[in-house]
Length: 283
Image (tube, rainbow, N blue to C red; front, top):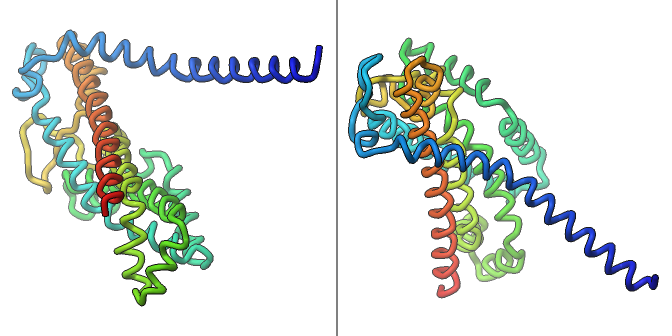
């Protein structure tokens, strides 16, 4: 056997191993989607999106309050986390060699690895106990804390990928460092940053543990940030452990809606990325 034939065989074996690894990674995802879609599609209906939960033991109803509550919680989280995360990422990229930037980076990496239930306990201590009240604001605060390190690290990495001559050109034309960053460097990395933000929203939309300590739950419709608020994840958890078959049916429907939210966020991220890239190319 020639050396060329041996290299071809080795290359084929490596490609086959890579393909088998990809299939092995996709099999669990396929099973999850199969069960969620298979069970949820039979349980979902118009009432699920338009009606409130029925009293305990009574069949029917829906999760309209939980859907609205999830949108409220993610909105509060994004309002808090996006500005802080983006500005933190800008600082870490512009002052990458400083001690403080390294400390912020280490803190972001550590916070990103903290279990969500620990963040829930922290939010309970700073946003629930002092006010003696579970609330949507406390739930959004907990989710925002989870979003900040994701957005900060994503922003930093994408800003570091912007070619140095772009920044240097802006500075050579007389722009200040701040203006060069916000008018030249940041727009160049904006498509990726927007993608990271949308994916971070999809990440926190499926969290349950922090909300058990903060927004708690609410079987009624609520739009007041100062009051306990329902969320899809908490409602699914409560329904899944209940002894009622109809609640189990609605739990599967809620799981399907959550998967749909993640899918929509992924599609929006792709659409926003392509749109911003086209705008940037034309500009």
